[in-house]
Amino acid sequence: MAKDRKALKKKAKAKLWLRSGGRCQYRGCNKPLWRDDLTMAELNGSNIAHIHGVAKSSARHIEQYEDKVDSFENLMLMCYDHHHLIDNDGKDWESHTADALRSMKKQHEDRIDLLCSLTEDWKSDPLIYGKPIGNGQPIITPGNIFVALQPDRYPTTSEGTIISLRDQTARTYSEAYWKSEEDHLRTHLNSTIIPRLRSAIVNHLSIFAMAPQPLLILLGHLIGDMVPTEIHPFIKETGKWGWKKGEDKDFDIIINRPKNYDGPPALLLSFSATVTRDRIYPCFNNEKPSIWEMTIPSPNTDWLYYRNQLACFCNHIRKVFEEIKKLQSDKGILTHKVKTAGVKYADLIEIMNSPNPDDSKESREYRSRRVTEGNKRY
Image (cartoon, rainbow, N blue to C red):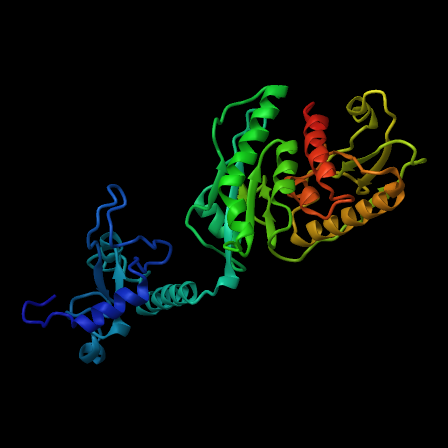
């Protein structure tokens, strides 16, 4: 800046800070400029950059713009590194044209305007639940959450409600382990998210969960359907959370009903793998179950990546539950088991988030207990 130039007007500076949200406007940076990220100490780390430079030798200078060179439209708020990059003594001016910088400025300001104008209907409370599966470790970060929720929803908090990411070590699935994890999940839900659901503080819930199958079913059962809830899957091939974008894919769900309905009902779900029925019988001791099966023509691990596929699964499983209820209604409390090998994580939560065949207190308690017992062999 020339020594005889007047300082920028306070009004232009204030407007620039407000419209940028106090963050670097260089595309992809978004660095907060009011604090030091390492120590979290408050400071002013901003640089005010000019799209059209001030001096004749500066980047993108044009004489026609000299009268409004310090106008808001010609200013960008940036961190030191990116201010230096766009004005780097002519070394990189070709890739940082005035049009390119104006595009960055507009996109950043439009995004800040959108985020600040969100109503409650756009917001969702993220619920994060992760437990090791064998030696696998769940990875759920605030960045994962924000990307997965856009463009339909935005998180109410930067980190979400973390129910469990504790004790991240491989586990042997003993009875003591299941009991400990069930108590842990119930305790944390009852002390965090459930009171907020019941008091209508939370209007929408977004679940990011990866854990052994029985715990996912218990999670869905405990949350129930108190508020609208969306489940976001983990896509292994991309390493990201959230449904695949683009055209929805459909599939046919096959319902195989038992030959007779004399025994206690068991529901076998075979979607990402074929499950043999001999894995079910040990769960029933001396009883012979009436086995219902939901499957697809060719079970495979890539069967559930689109949002409409989960909706299709939910519709079918609700109908199956209703059919079981109708057939078993003359037998008192309906107790059932869900064998879940070959099912995606999103489905497992939805299974117990769906309306159930019998919703009496005794049945809910029995169902929660027996689902865990019936699946601990995994």
